[in-house]
Image (cartoon, rainbow over all chains, first blue to last red; front, top):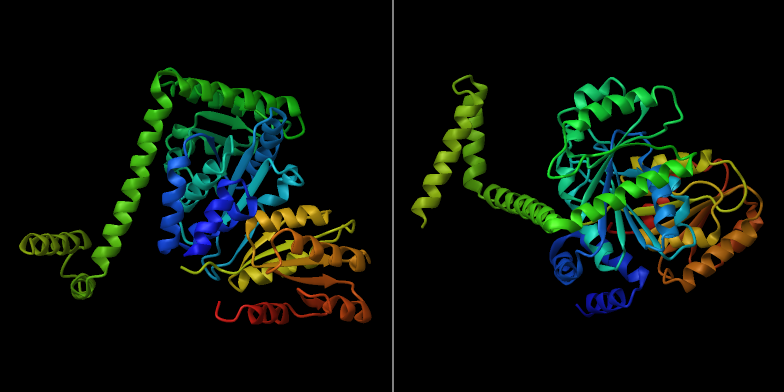
Length: 321
Length: 133
């Protein structure tokens, strides 16, 4: 498709419209998406990728706007991928993250892309990482990924970025207990946002105590207090991000982390294609329906039915060799 | 895979009322579209930049301030010169009939919707702009 080659050529010369259209090609999937990702992949790896996650309403978009301002002030170009949930009922979505990202207007050094989750259940869909690849290859110095409002089990986010910032608010006080194992475990930086509100200090104290136990491989995740009303507080977060960036530069840590992330992305894709290949077999769906009837009738518990199905597949794949 | 229709909803200019824009955003979401809402007080340049970066299928603006005869042609013109010539523009708000008629004569301005328009009509109109989607 000559059109795609043309888009890739414009993209390589820094055309934002071409970058945007290529992202849509990636979103639509299929062979064209694969060609774009093939072309983009060798040019990735230069940007510092920062994931910002936390519960809905914690101020992630506003904080990203402030970080964008700070990075632009330091002369760095910025890309943002912001994900919001799709309605499970209509499939539609209202993508409102841009509403808070007022700094984007009129500055070609900032590129913001909104993404609907389209049924993905993780806080950042695999597609978000692929759009981040496009922005990375587009030459952005920093790529910020904003997750949907994340739950405590949302730990896969660490595979989307070099640095993970977990944002909480003073109201989250009681949630911290439940976050101890889960989201906070993947935080490279914890952030108490809206720190001008009551309870911020005590939450920061609690988080500090938790983070003290999370020291690993020479990095002690810091707890920052930020407020969009206080530019200085955002500067301390920017500084912590720069510290983590330098930390990654030493002792091959960035390469190790990216290797782990690529492995997770590869594994997810393999699982997806194995799953879809397996389910394409009409034999399996027939057997599934048959065995499901036995489960419904109370003849088999689900785990035993699953094992029987898996074993019959295994036998099939061995005999076809 | 098809992507749902992606629509940018924007409020250009100085009026501070976005109830209508939000009602439309919700109606389009409920019709299965992906809606990027950019909020109040956007300049035409900001709207065009958002439309470029988001690669939307349609730009929809709401103007209640009376500045529609300035803002809408300006947005259309900027779209044409920013690689968005193929992206359609619709508008809603307080727009008198004779102004609406004039605006609709601009190439690429697909529809103008005044007060009292039902959200269902807007959804049907937009779906009609993209047969087969």
